[in-house]
Length: 316
Ligand SMILES: NC(=O)c1ccc[n+]([C@@H]2O[C@H](COP(=O)([O-])OP(=O)(O)OC[C@H]3O[C@@H](n4cnc5c(N)ncnc54)[C@H](OP(=O)(O)O)[C@@H]3O)[C@@H](O)[C@H]2O)c1
Image 1: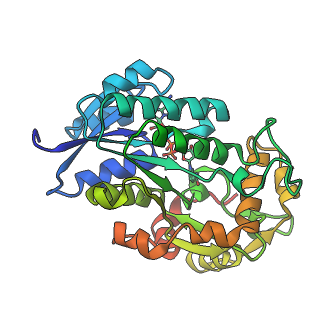
Image 2: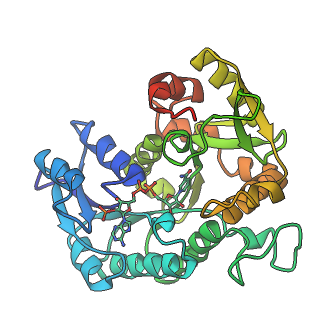
């Protein structure tokens, strides 16, 4: 253990970071050891990590000094923020900045920053095809992550910028699973037209991150996009129908209708899907399936993920 390179894993109790911890642990010959970073060292999840012999360290992204201590002595760090806990892009940028500064302070050799595109590079605020949100964003939870990228670069932190994809786990946790319409038929609803949505099993994000740490020299300073498959709404509906053994339709709605659904974050997500639809070549092109599979040879397809998770998907 002592000679292993320590990776401080932010979000170790969550989906992305948890996937990385699992990937390191399942490789018995790994040269890395995870250090789980959490605000709540006594939570059920944190205690279960500690039980596995993992070092669990308390830190809060809103407390830069705690992060500096948590990163000290580590070789690298996996950095992720959770926008959906507060819905505040400025807070997300501040948290990412605190991680970059702590990484610099600890002289880390490799950081994987889980980021997304700053969509304003393609859709400037003056572009009225989608509304500007919160005064200066098009897709707040994307834009603030992308805005943080240069912070890592300017501080000289050796960073891999990891562009993630829509988790298929959203069908379990995020309320986007098949729902019964007025006709009683199940449907999934996205404003994607016939364009492809890059998707991935959340745990594969962690496995890919592990692949990046293993090949660090190849990836430092690079942006890497990952996805398990690029599928249209219609293709996902076919996969659902086959696996659930009942008809699931794809309900394509205009982005403005999606933005008006009224749930928290509906406008942000409506703009996000519209960005993915209207810049589909750019968005899919940034998430190469062969590179993803090279990083993580056990990469799941949507069919395989569905077969393993069908019992966990609420059908409302
Ligand atoms: N859903 C999708 O399709 C999708 C796709 C791409 C990217 N994303 C992005 O993924 C991010 C969420 O990642 P996830 O799904 O892995 O999260 P998650 O499963 O919801 O877990 C959140 C993790 O973040 C940690 N955390 C949150 N605030 C923290 C703070 N102030 N200090 C320290 N740790 C903190 C939590 O740790 P403790 O509670 O233990 O402290 C927990 O481990 C979001 O920013 C989202 O935009 C989502």
